[in-house]
Image 1 (cartoon, rainbow, N blue to C red):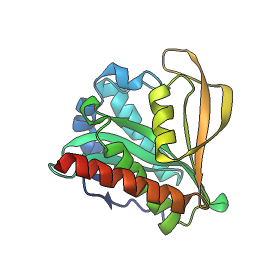
Image 2: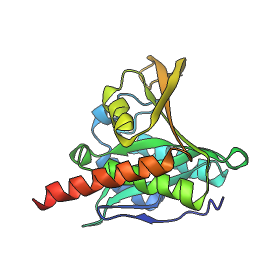
Image 3: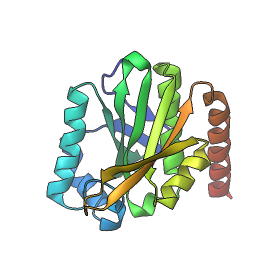
Image 4: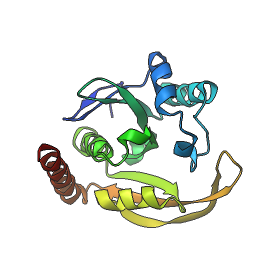
Length: 201
């Protein structure tokens, strides 16, 4: 697995390697406290967003993550961040997560295209056998989004994490495997085509 930072480009979104140079725009994109309700960190302030970005870059330096800044392709606006994390080359496994989007970009098709680009890279460039996702058991929006992209729910890890408010969080795990990928790829391409058709109408 080549973990050198790289660019992923789609029709509506561009994933660029995360950089401290993006910090100001990421702080603006993540300023709504509601974004962080389910997280173990609260990135809604300049200080906490810096910590979020520095954590991603430190994980990258250890070879455990490949973090991205999410940009709108049409205008280059920075609207969030996501990353590959928990990378295990020996077991051909990685997690997609640490994702946030500015509220105006939620439910716009950007998340679908992001997941498509990352899953395609995971299975077709890195030849992984498994990509996993986890989310708060109470986060129905995220759980529905993972089901919508075709990920399989695997189970709940009870008392798994603490949110930044101190609430005990149960985490639900989902996955896409290399056997699943052809089906999931067709499904995601269909979702993106329907979204593009709706935009053009």
